[in-house]
Image (tube, rainbow, N blue to C red):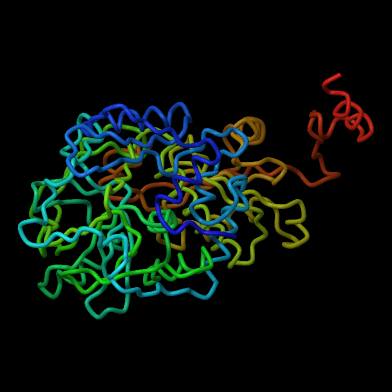
Length: 490
């Protein structure tokens, strides 16, 4: 396993497999870069790297679709795999297993390094010089509430007592050169940290990090248990500590290889209207809310900084690829901890994180003697919907045998169409609902509660009605298959 230390080495790795498109023509940060990025998701084309930003004065570049589905059909998860130090050919089950195994690994805490020589300190701006006006800020969707400078950057914060260092992602919108606002909502972890400061009546110190090692925003975008330091998890994930350096004006440490770091404080009150912004369900939201304000007190950045952008919307973008994969790993971790025989869990990207697929091995009946499929699926539901946290945010879950690959869309659609009873073999649970989940009613989204349904799609046991596939792999003897493959190009 090898890890990439900064965003620039990640771009090099994508270029090496033909999954990076350098765009040298002038591109506007006002919608055009995001529109190009959005089209790249929908066509599954290489990630765009914009080197000529209109109105830029400092050599700024932009990088779109950082962890979208790869343009390489033979390695669709290449961007996810490279982000966490795995080969670009890594498949879905192996990727989720890697995240699950790291949960119990010993954390590798970040490694402090001197400010001298830290790439993120090549330019240090303080006082009046620390203004967002220095950068050309992206606008992502036409109907957004403003220019969203943060769609793939990481907010670094810690609780007042210093017991929890949290690295997380939330969208952040520009108000002016010295102020920003963004979603800060408990029970999300950034919201909990902010709440601890607000209850003391003190603004929360923060640092907003753009760029750095690709594992940093990846891990910041997946659900981890409350109180877990993402920095230590990243170190365990990549097998080496993240180099960090002290901020200029706040008592925080940030990745030394960051492209841009913005420092300041987050207000105690909810002082500014935020939104709307296009959401992961795939629709242009009209949701707005009062949120705290980020003051801008210092900015440090690399020469010719690279600003990553995510054009969130219809699948598949980073919210589906990264957060969906993280939620799948979270569910798999819980199911295995409960002693249930589960092969893998996957949230298929086209379903916009509204579907979850749990696959189980042939021997589940031997592992759970006397348990039928209805009881087995009920136990899976108890773990998913009674565990709280992100695992519960799953509107529809399908339990299938592992003779299908849930990350293969054709395989999955065939299994769902032929194994789910049109009316029976399902169980509903009361679950957490997010305001952005398009399948729920307005009342359910406002209450943040609604039904989650588990479907029992398990086949009968062998010898009790289970049938072979009428497929190349299962409908022909090995010798015939071998002859066909050996002479395929004749």
